[in-house]
Length: 202
Image 1: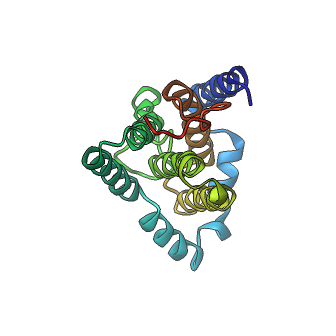
Image 2: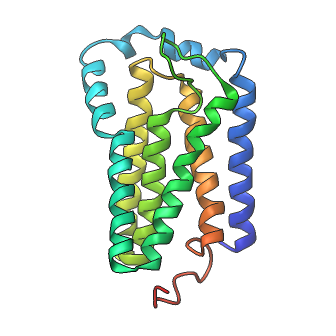
């Protein structure tokens, strides 16, 4: 894709996430109501599996990776790893917009609902992993991309199954992270046509 297309897609995704957040802030769409009221989705053993998925694929995992990348880039004085760490951090920061929307969760919980923190963290890690793989191990990009999509999907489903989030919370998280990821990656020189042609990593 050209830089213009990457920019356009990034802006479009951020716009979609923003519009969705405004739309669901004060009312619950019918789609969310249906998912939340579909009792077979919220019974054992699904909730048991969902609890483990939410435990493993969590903001804690993203924290460990971010700290690891930061330390590794500092010790090795590796500017590529530093940029990858910045990309992960910027993608993850999209969760902070929840304080602007202040959407209530499906259950009584002391944190705002939109966007989902778990899905934001895992999507940020997934997006950054694909970008990093494209730079460091291109032959594995398709495998990593498939694993990334699977991880995001499992996380999103687990949060809905546990009634910790509405479905639209998960959709808003994914669109925001990918949109910001494309825009940030473009600015950092990590995403776009020809960005990997120069492999001197400086």
